[in-house]
Length: 372
Ligand code: SF4
Ligand code: SF4
Image (cartoon, rainbow, N blue to C red; front, side, top):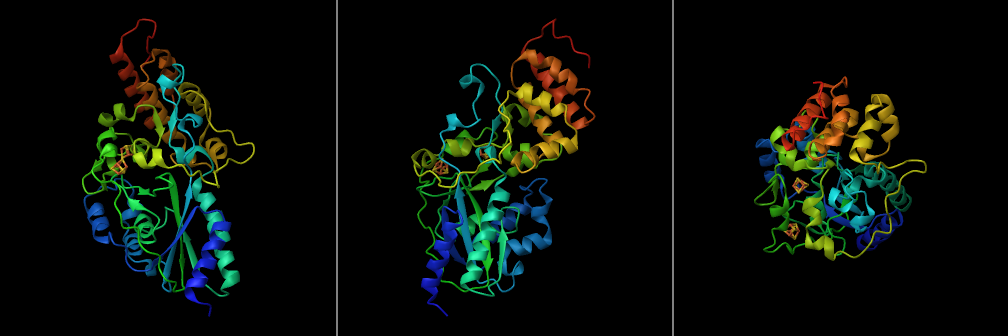
């Protein structure tokens, strides 16, 4: 057998050729924060994400050999999607977009669904390893899989876990997505990333509009706009809706304020790109709402297949857009909200009713007579 260090470096190079920005190796032992993770679940901070609390998923999260019994090494990979200047993305806010109410969408969702991107690249990586080590066993995971990926990324030397709970690398910032290959080869682990570069900074904690970031790098997902607009299936709690603003899919605030993202200057060589013919929605919230109202579930799935926006579904996305309209302070959208009141989905109707009340509270106007 080849020298394990040489073999590891050969494998690392093969991984870079498959399109990863970072590749690190961690031992397949229980992750360092297993106790904290269990505590996080016990406190219910995962909200409606019941799949996280399923007993078999928890077992596998706590011990990678539950997922692949022969697993000896976890290869952690990352793909960066920054630092595209924010002005080039469709994340403009009303003040910077000539008064138009543009939807704010998380950066990572601006192209193809990253799960698909990772699956393709991790499959490529597995094949490359197999050609060098015939008979090797691998299992791939993206973030839907039960792996405490930020823990292993830190163990593999990719960065530190910031107060915003994101993995941060001094060169790439926190705009990186992670994916893992579990492998039955025993390879020497990389050095863990030890420094904590957050220091006394607390910009992310202060900037979070819903106070979702708790002490000791704990996130109450139930308060996080990313959870509320993507993972939550039911109504967004009323008291949180004003803080959601025009964020109709995810939230990047705690990353945008992070000085390590402003410092990060190394652009990824592997930007996510849309398939030819896929048109990313760049329209105003009201125009986008009109488009979605005209779609049924099946045509929505076809339209958004292959993008992260498919995740909340038609009703979830229209729910979020209704909140954005309610926060718009623009009474010209009242006729549109009235149309939303006729949608078959009670979820959409309820959020439209709330949005109308919000706008009414802003200012009562006779020309905007409602027919609730
Ligand atoms: S993503 Fe937004 S809501 Fe969630 S913790 Fe960060 S700033 Fe708060
Ligand atoms: S904003 Fe400051 S505290 Fe928050 S993750 Fe970045 S460096 Fe750490």
